[in-house]
Length: 135
Image (cartoon, rainbow, N blue to C red; front, top):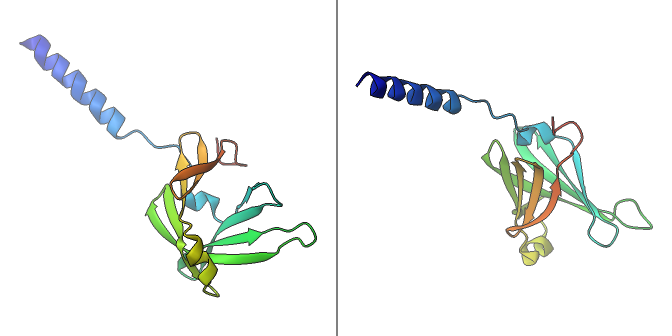
């Protein structure tokens, strides 16, 4: 009986230690203001998480070969957790009907190996060594 009590105590102590362990991953807010560049087979694009007043937005830039930036879109951001946001369903400043026709839904997530971007549920980029974040 004494052994069972000791084993139960050890098991409870191990559960308490693992439950209080700190998550050392970066959070989405740690990427605030950092430009995430995407190579898309053409000249590329970037996405930057910004805070305007009390709202978070994603600024998406489209790059061109003759001009540095062909165009920009701003998306409203929906926080799913400290480690995940979704955007793409609603553009702002100015509203863009073309974006709604594209049916793009993005999810930006901090995972174990780094920052991941999903387009309509498909992982399109993994950045394990985003500057200053994978420490």
